[in-house]
Image (cartoon, rainbow over all chains, first blue to last red; front, top):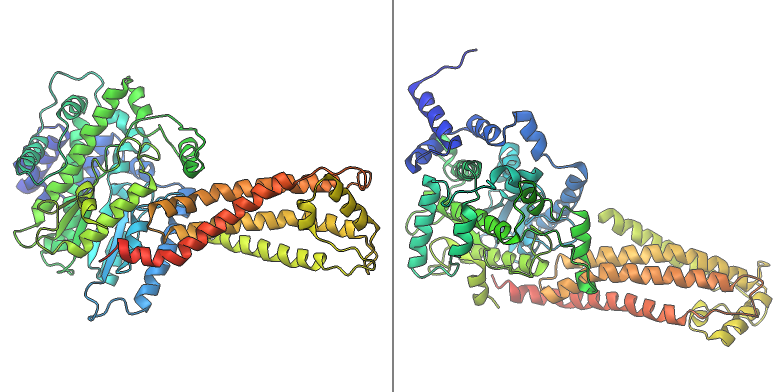
Length: 407
Length: 178
């Protein structure tokens, strides 16, 4: 059947083409996010990755062993969830108790060895957490799989928390495809990035923000980001917007089944591209060389950059800095789309600058103590988001700031 | 991990039952099987013990030495069992331990349990060598210097696990005040 072109679809097609060619205006992005549907998102990602739909699905799919370990951890967590619910956890007399549905990647589900963020959140006696998170999962999978939809309908949680996007950037050596090894003196112009930076500058100038941009690292790193990175960043914006709009506002229907639910997003800290195995004699850190040898260390960031001829470690770090900086700003910006003064419903946990130089297990994952810290900030957010002054600023909880308030 | 936990407990319990039965094999003479004593024996005492066992008959017609040999072989299953149990139980407790230091110690128990198990394998292999007929009463290779760190390692893992088990609940309430 031939496609039916209307002025609206023609306009949408033009907006999508503009996004893919890195010439979309900010107003264009706002218009596109109101119109984009699942087919459009699929079309966009196929063109960013230069793959067909099946290839994209295959690329993002988890292997069987990974799925087995993920399922095992979730099964254990979800058994604990059922036990809590069975003990009348949700009761009008216990308003401080929170039911949480979680979807995410390896920061939320790192099988067996590491204590991850959700492990820590689930330690809160006043939280019953149901997890759909899978280590290695792509945001793309989470949205197309839509497993969270069924669980939302069943449990009507107080919070939906999500950590996603990291694997869409670093999975399958994609970093190599979104950098430009021969940059110009200035970064490629992009209206959405300009909007994010202006917003960040304003927040920094307001003085409440403790996470400051490192201008040297950012300005150097951003020059190496190709138009495909910008397309991916705008694509993330569309994905998060579609997901959150669907939950809070029922998508295009405009009526939500979950009028009281709140959503928390998560960014990452700046990882360090490395292929160092970190052999040593500290038995307390036995897992670091083990993980680095067997579980992909070096293949996510360092190797793909070397593949494109970016061998300087400082430049590699600056590129990753710029990516993660913008990713977090994108996630923070999403909150502005849904929050109104006095009625915040979307929050962001900002982990930047919380892990530090020596805080990494491998290229992507923090040491357990840092995951626990991030988890404690999540728990703090769950209980304090509706109290004035609790966030670091606006709807953002900065991990390194909130930790100062915790025992 | 659930599978590992169940398998570990089955191996652990089976080996304990079998070894307990062997340990208390009724002897016709005055010999008595005490493998722990052998583990910490010096060269002379080791020779004497093994000679006594080789001379002592049980009601089933075997020598105590033959039973010690069998018990030592079953000990390999016990090793597998306790290493798996320590790892599985430490992992289980790790999910409930919010204090980074204890959480880290529970994780370290994975490696310490494996080290204890390897030391135990080394110790058992040496003991089985000592039980060769041509060596009994003549030569004994001591294993106390392997057994001591093995027991210390296993005891450390249990201590860490117990400490966390008994105090994690209070720590969770403190670190997650709600």
